[in-house]
Amino acid sequence: MSGMAMWCASVSLSESLYMSTQSWKFLYTGPNELSFRRKDIIEPILSNKELHKGPYYDLRQVPARNPVDGIKDYREHAARRRLWSRGTSVSMTKIYTQSLIVGIHELLDELLKRQDTTIDISEWLSFTATDFMGRMTFSTSFDMVKMGYDSVGIIKPVEEITYQSNIIAQTPWIIPYLMWLPQGKKALNQGHRLGGDMVRKRKALGTDTRDLYYYLMDEAGFENVKPRETDVLSDGITAIAAGSDTTATAITNTLYYLLKHPDVKTRLQRDIREAFSSSREVYDYAKSVKLPFLDACINESLRLLPPGLTGFQRQVDPSGRGKMLGEHFVPPGTNVYAHLYSIQRDPRYFSPLPEIFWPDRWLDQNTYTLPTGESISKDALMLSRDAYYPFSIGQQSCAGRNIALLELKTLLIAILRHFDIQVAEGYQLDGYEEALKDVHVTLRGPLCVRLHSVATWMIKTCQATSYQARNRTDFQSREQ
Ligand code: HEM
Image 1 (cartoon, helix red, strand yellow):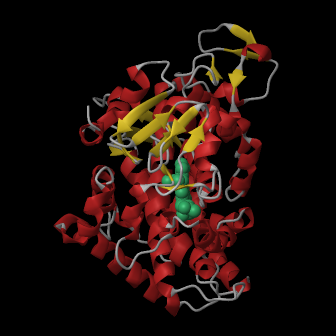
Image 2: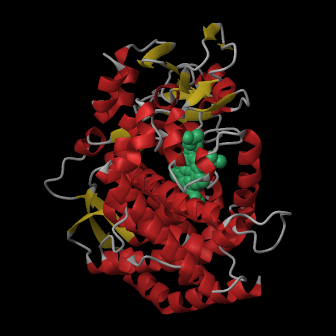
Image 3: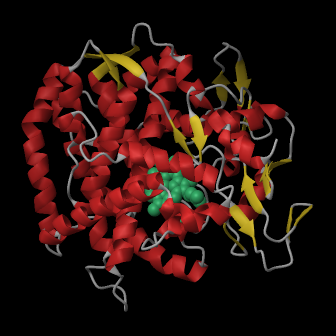
């Protein structure tokens, strides 16, 4: 099958590649494209300055846009990435936690109103993650959670353009004409209009507010050359596009696995409720660091269903001499991937039960009890951490990893602490995984659940104090 046809039919491309033969080392996935299934190739592909981002990323560089994730030149990228690193460091997560908590309380309010009815939790998580990116980047919420719908009309257009980009990326010569296509033009204009509005509102807040914009704009004056406002605008839109859906997918996938494995869900819920037993601790989400089983569940979900299923395209220098990847000579201009989905499920790197959601594999123990009831010793466990890279590796890896993990933990804690969660009546749980579309990132369908509050008093306490948290965020911004 030609690459184009494969990508057009890529409803579950990663799954098909993985299943095509259990032992493939590399496959042709396009006319000029190779996908490797070996962990020793991950670093040579993703952490190698001789390989640049491939033609897929040319789509990022449409007129008037120059976001960090589309920059191919390593020096230019490093300069831009410095700004991101300041704004997404671990120390910044403390500041963003306050904004996140405000959003979580809004979500809990809305979920409580809808308890014991069928809801699509996937959609609510998209609203929450997008609102948070607005707050974190520009100190403005889109209020999607409060309104219960995509109030700025951004989620669907971003999904559409992601889907189309995935196909167009196979025919890079079309890219310069993208702006002539009505859908491409509409989505780009919408993104720019929204970004422009956000920047205008953000500027009105002054130069002291500590958010991502503050660092992207270098308000603190660390740099010799002030960043261009158009670049900051592009990066702001990128934060919302790259940070909302990936995180919402990761949390939804984790809930899917918990629903599929009720024993794991019960165990995690018990851990969380024990750790957060009193109202006094409502804001002490940092405690999550002492919840190794929560981390294990998140790792396991990101191993089996990472939001970027296929991996991340790089290209062997078209004007160079080609490149050895392992024992393979790869000619100039070839696009290469380390196939994430297959590598993270490979029995050589994760065993036993590489395809089963079994979070215990991430815990440090002398013996392990498998879901089958059988016991195995530590020596019989294979866990290759160097074959686990849902955030990619190297200089161009995820700039928002710390933020994403913060969101994943706090949202899962909040939902599982306050609600019992069950599959909605009539909803086929297996259909969730079957409906996932692999288009560079994952597009997902609904995950229909029923929630039942187990701690109404806790939510009321949250509501009473969320006003204080909101004020604390503003105060903190002024204080820094
Ligand atoms: C679970 C959630 C997330 C996952 C799994 C994830 C994964 C990734 C991966 C694999 C890449 C590299 C892609 C490539 O090379 O093509 C990436 C890049 C990026 N991510 Fe994330 N991401 C997540 C959340 C976030 C969040 C919350 C933000 C924003 C705060 C963010 C911002 C970015 C940016 C700006 C880049 C481009 C980095 C660069 O090119 O230097 N991501 N992400």
